[in-house]
Length: 176
Image 1 (cartoon, one colour):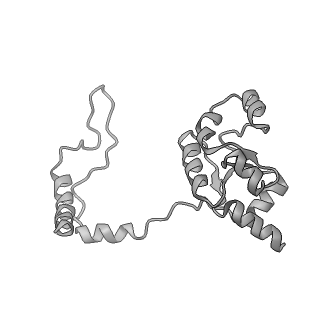
Image 2: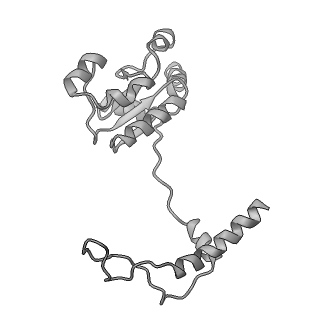
Image 3: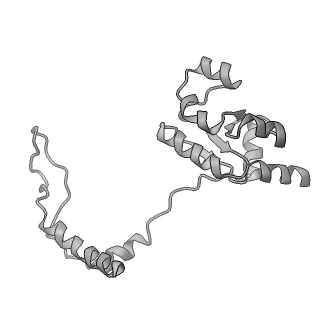
């Protein structure tokens, strides 16, 4: 029943849009600025199924995942700041990815808003700039995804995650 209603609503949406009071190109909005609306009802009307089929061809967002080999290369080239978001006791118990900075997940939001000197004093590494590559890692990839979202919401544009986390790192290091 709910599915049928949603399809019915989806079919009504184009009709609602055609009847809307959208501004026409060139008309003005309050404040005297002209509209840039591209609403044009002179185009042939498309069926809802045509619109739904078009969405299948939309490009997917680029992946934010980094593999073990990629992380190894980024660390060797020093082209990324690697942030381990585990708690300090976890690093002592399991181990550390060499070259990473430890910022527990609960502190990521605050840490990325500190000044460079305060960041370096508290976390022992250089404060990443908003355009630097930052790779978040944790034990198994769950917390790193949360940290990635927090950094992106603060305006960091090159945020990545190592979804395998420490478990994948240690497995690969033992094999290599």
